[in-house]
Length: 85
Image (cartoon, rainbow, N blue to C red):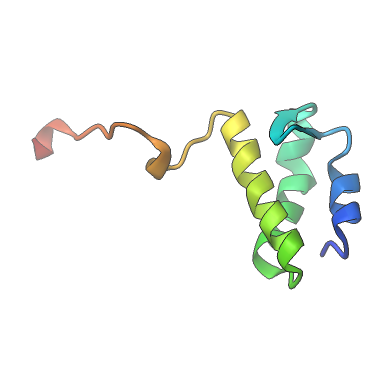
């Protein structure tokens, strides 16, 4: 499950995610939501290689962004429930 090299990481995303000029595009959404995301998450937390750790973390954020998933920090406005106004 742990990537041993950046080449192994790059090989695992071929045909699923494309990185071009710093931009990520998703080729196979179903494959992203399967084992790939689990492996990326595992490596983003537990891999001891800093390069792999950083690339998997970047990939997770870039893939989420491409899928329309935004963190609360990325939102420009936050809706406040009427009961709190």
